[in-house]
Structures are given as structure tokens and as C-alpha cells.
Picture 1 (cartoon, helix red, strand yellow):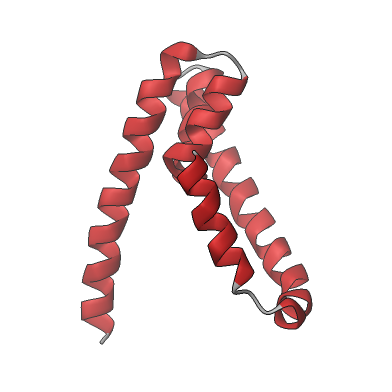
Picture 2: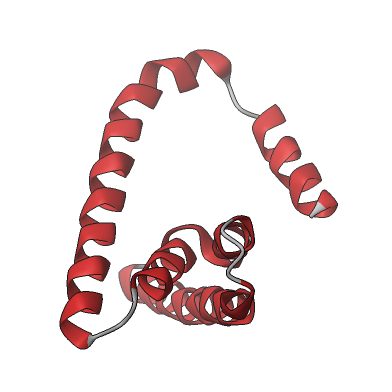
Length: 109
């Protein structure tokens, strides 16, 4: 966790404040729309498939924010039985997303 915070602080320290303030509002709205549609989709599909609300919330967090945010949500809500699945789902998403990203980069280059 400490190394993750150092990494995030390093990324944030290199940001241009003026450019961030100019572009942040539209990016925030875009991200809000994407996350809202994603969460609604996961909850609807989870309901149709008979998956519980807790599992849908953690799965959505793993898809959007990766294993770190999914574990944080599962731990904060005291859902200890969902911590390991959160890590596994987030890590699997990173692995699959990396292969798809490299494939698309090669395809478009």
C-alpha cells in the first residue's frame, strides 16, 4: 500500500496544474458517465444472473479501479470473503486488458 501511494504521488507530481484545470471538468464528466453506465450494467446483469449485490459491487470496482480499489471496498465494508476474489478479478482484468491493448496497438500501428 505504501509503495502504491508513492507511485501515485510520483505520477501526480509530474502533472501540469494549468493543463489539468483546463481539461479536468470535461474529463470528469466523461469518466462519471462511463463509470455510471458500467455500474448500472453490472448491477442489471448481476440481477438477471442471480448474483448478489455485494459481489456485483466488488466486481464493478475491480473492473473500474483494479484490484487495489476492489480490495479497499471489500475491506471497508467488512466483506472478508470477497477480498481474494477482488484481487483475482482485478489482476485477471489487468492481464486480459494488457494483451488486448498490445494487440490493438500493433493492429493500429
